[in-house]
Image (cartoon, rainbow, N blue to C red):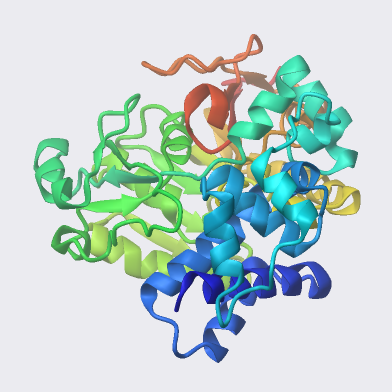
Length: 425
């Protein structure tokens, strides 16, 4: 495909997302099924263009004076991908191009309007209704934080110490240009690709199939590390999902003790079994909700209950930019109810003197500090154990961990450690 056809395809996909409210993955898949002629580079180009448009659609629409799919896509080409007006015009006029530029479009492409006078939600690329909540979280820094959340994300990897070490892994990862990510010794990073480029295939590295490393954002790795010393312990991953943090905890345990993986959705746990086998985990028990009482017998016996709670995913909008435009106040309220319920249920398994780690990939206080505060009010037998993790400086005055793309270079994550008294208060 030539550039004009690729850009036309991106406009088509973005229009379908806007008008039919399809998730971006579904819209791109539907386009791919009809565009059999498109090669891997074409698909990477279209996908990258659509995702960049979704990351910054409000600010780009403002600068272009046109919030349509076409206007936003042209904004990506000019202001993010740095195409010259002549190159955009050339692509527009190709046989399968997107139509000649208007005089207004040429003017905007040649002299973009500053965002200095734009409303904060436009400059920061987020829905208006989130303004109050983001100011509460970030204060005057909400725009700079949200702009960081609109950048392309790197690919982070976690070295699996059950199979190898960081030095050997570094040699295996050298062909895909992965380098130490910092903060954690077993974290590696592949920088975000340039416009229209693809990230190197991690799965193509032979060591991946051997279980030497897992794809996992650095923020997620840090959140798992917050659990502290877990060797020889009884650990329950209460909302295990696909098993990313389960495997991180298992590696930290060194195949000692016992780790139980549970999730309310049995389908999500299916992949955990396969991934655990590849990673060399030998102390894992899957507790599936298919069973009538999957966690029977664990009440009050677990040293560390890890709760990766269901949330809005607001901290992962670099990777899932369409999610921030689909989020609604009703959905946020529903998540808070679910979070309260999960905390109540998970607490029953924490033994006296044990701890519960509450984690979300959200940046919103509504889903984080507010939920913890409410839980502590209901459960005086629990107290906050301030997080102290070597190399991690993003701890709040209350002792919670808050990671953000701007400050930490990770997806957004929140973590709190709640310790159960060894006696009844």
